[in-house]
Length: 171
Ligand SMILES: CCCCCCCCCCCCCCCC(=O)SCCNC(=O)CCNC(=O)[C@H](O)C(C)(C)COP(=O)(O)OP(=O)(O)OC[C@H]1O[C@@H](n2cnc3c(N)ncnc32)[C@H](O)[C@@H]1OP(=O)(O)O
Image (cartoon, rainbow, N blue to C red; front, side):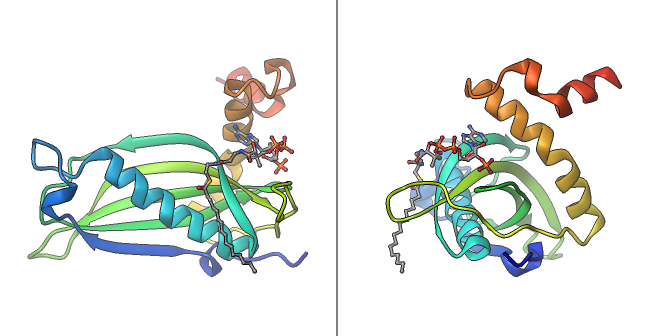
């Protein structure tokens, strides 16, 4: 299967925060942001694999900064690493200052998607070739995140998590 670059499946969603999408503090409701993140990440997974993709795990979500009513929010979803049928997608959330246009990070998320066939069975996905320094560092760290996720899901024994053990051994 031919390898692809992260830029080939990059998904960027830019949208406003409208009144029906806020919490009582007049900031974007967390669940609304999660829905937007899931949509962007699933499009990225489909673009990379060209298969039906399901969310296997939400590995990490950080809301670093409240996003106020009326803000312009941009969500960028990129494949950071692929394994056999699974893909780790890293999602960056940005707000844009209305006057200066300066982008501020509002959060990050890491999701795992699995490509499946018509009967829901996992199928292989193309390998990924990271290009930028950030893509390379996210690629390098993805295996230990996968091992941690599998341990938390009860699908891997801690004793089998070689990459994670190496991280702590070096600490
Ligand atoms: C012509 C076409 C027209 C099409 C037109 C129709 C369009 C129609 C579009 C419909 C599009 C629907 C898109 C809905 C998108 C949602 O809404 S997803 C909704 C929420 N998610 C779900 O319902 C998924 C439910 N879970 C599952 O189906 C199964 O658990 C999964 C995810 C497929 C995994 O199955 P499994 O039997 O556990 O398989 P297993 O081989 O153990 O694991 C597969 C891979 O997942 C990894 N994995 C499993 N669990 C984890 C975990 N917790 N953490 C990390 N990795 C994990 C494994 O390590 C493995 O990775 P690889 O080593 O293969 O890379």
